[in-house]
Image (tube, rainbow, N blue to C red; front, side, top):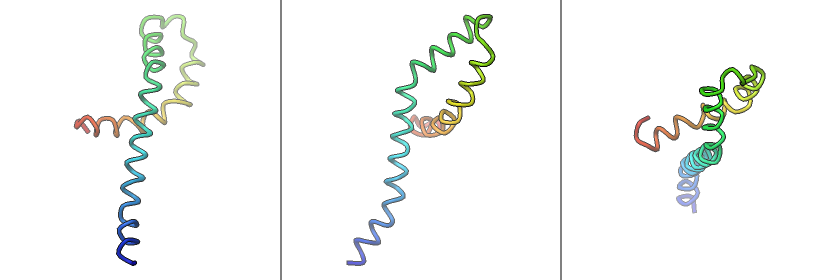
Length: 79
């Protein structure tokens, strides 16, 4: 009985890491159209972008993106 519990205890962190990676990739892929649209606004319509909008996006979305990028790079074999 102890062996299965030990096996589960070892595998739980790996499963949690895999789930976290999948959720990060899911977040980025679902947010990708918005990320691209915001980038396009910054590049092509810079004069019309409000500084407060950029600040709000940086405060609300950038932290999650910074967590996801290393996992995506690792998944692509570039990390």
